[in-house]
Length: 159
Image (cartoon, rainbow, N blue to C red; front, side):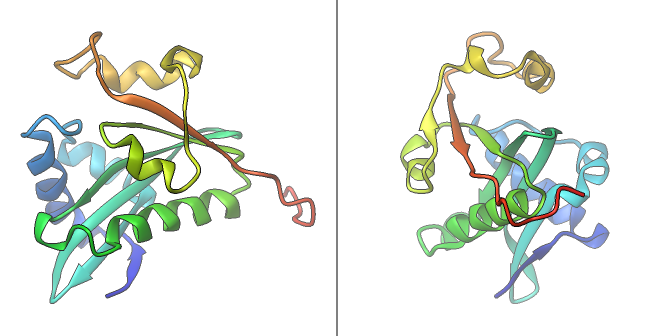
């Protein structure tokens, strides 16, 4: 099994996987159009011809990205695939010279293992709330806001 960038042919499976967790109130529903529009954000892992996990790194600004839509099929959880997907996003953020990655999560202990720290949600830029407005829990969200501050690599060219 290998983690790779998502392809157009993966969209139906990503949609089904993410929305199965959203149906349980564990993440936001993602319409097909949004997945297609943000396909370059997604990483997937396949096993035996099926997608068993996905995760996206969405850029907001030069210094801020979000890890979102992390989902691993239940029968494959606790085998390191979620961690591998998050690590792929962190690696991509570093490659892009993004200095801060945030997430909104119901599983803060999972993200703490990567160095994410709990922050006050109100410290995040208002721009991130665009998606929240379509959530049935808004404005009474009980997700935990977390951030990972990455160090800049001084040896890398900014261009």
